[in-house]
Amino acid sequence: MKKLKRVLALAVSLSMAVAIAACGKQETEEAGTEKPAGSTSVVYRTLDEIKESGTINIGVFSDKNPFGYVDENGDYQGYDVYFANRLGEDLGVEINYVSTEAANRIEYLQTGKVDVILANFTVTKERAEEVDFALPYMNVALGVVSPADNVIESLDNWNEGDEMIVISGTTAEPYLIENYPDIPLQKYDSYATAKNAMENGNGVAWANDNTEVIAFALQNEGYTVGIPTLGDQDTIAPAVSKGNETLLNWINDEIKLLGEEKFFHAAYEATLADTYGLDYEESLVVEGGGVQ
Amino acid sequence: MPDLGLEVLFKGKNMVRLLGGLWVALKISLLAVAISFPLGILLGALMTSKNPVVKGILRVYLEFVRIMPQLVLLFLIYFGSTKAFGWDLSGETAAVIVFVLWGTAEMSDLVRGALISIPIHQYESSEALGLSRAQTYLYIIIPQTVRRLVPLSINLITRMIKTTSLVLMIGVVEVLKVAQQIIEANRMASPNAAFGIYLTVFVLYFIACFPISMLSKHLERKWR
Image (tube, rainbow over all chains, first blue to last red; front, side):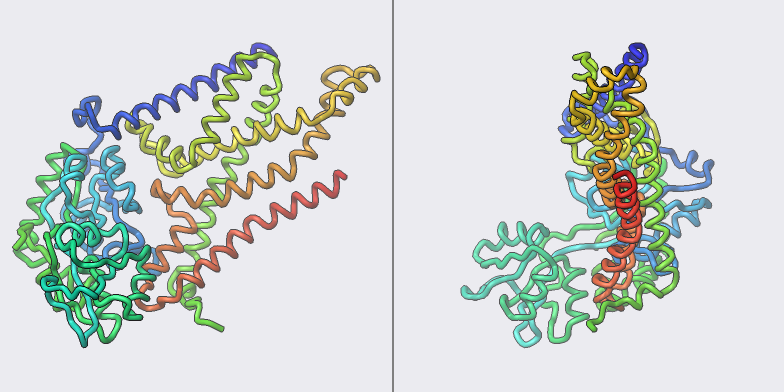
């Protein structure tokens, strides 16, 4: 009995040590101080390794209609997936789709658990330090929607008594505070409450991602997107693990090549046109990796 | 009758997908229960030991797992093990490991609590009757402990089943994730589907957990 106890204690303490070690590791990495990427081991798979294995792991959203979602037959669909399918086809490999969340996309690439992230991933400076972005395939910006009888087309000369609706935590909020400090904001916690406020006329306009306001104006009569793009244009791009150059270069070449056949316009028409209409095709699609 | 968007359930394979998701959730949680309960009983018995080292180590383990949110544990095991050791665990394996670690810790404390709740005179009376140590445990202590453990451990099992909703964060598509997928895929066609689908998920969890509660009731009655 005593011996058993000792063995058990040892096993438990070992597993604790492992857990704590993993924990400590995580912390230092999150602090992001001394982290020469891939110094210990290479986490990613090169282009040749992917081809050899016959499968590519692609992280996509599974619940962000119309960018990445799962249809009633259990198949992945959407703008991102349309592109992912083509990548797999041209690589000549099967695709293993991995359902990712906004909060774990970077982790997936840092651990090499997926080869590519195609999950409506907006290119930012902070993210570019953690992962490598390929050429963009879509634009995003802010947009402003307002009632059709009082369309707001410019944020200059703002009426003092009017208020702008925003959702807390979206990029619209800090942008407006910084660039238009005189505009009073009405902040809501969720899409649903902001939508209600808009419909009740609590504010004169609503600022949000332009894809969101465009979809809102199309689905609800009596609203017009007076400002379809506001502020800096951001882009959406595929991302690979930091340092995975062979795969990155291949994707970049592929995006350029697909530009010649207007692939992303076709993708837009197949997947996004139902939600956003054809009017926004030119402003949302980035073809061949070039931003206008 | 308000429009619950229940027609979405009968589109394509949606119902089968939801049931498949429930199966994933049950597979992870029940496998974890099967592994962690025996381990928890063993550790729980060890926790009552007089050896301060054993007690200390188990205490630290218990507190560590209990304080750490399950989501953090999932990230630690799934991503952390790859970063630290280069292990490539699948999402489901990582989920089972986390649920075993968690279930073992919680179960051991339940067992410890049940064991020390047996009054000392039970031991003393057994000794007076001439029972050996093994006999004392087998006939006197363990039967009483088990009875006290039943409601507590049923509670833990149902909690483990419900907590599987977190594993969607490590890429495992279980019932709640399928529900979100169905709701989002039909955002335009059936905007009311969210309510109906979540209602269905509620019913599915209920169907999974209710028999376990019934079993607990049955056992309690039988052993009264």
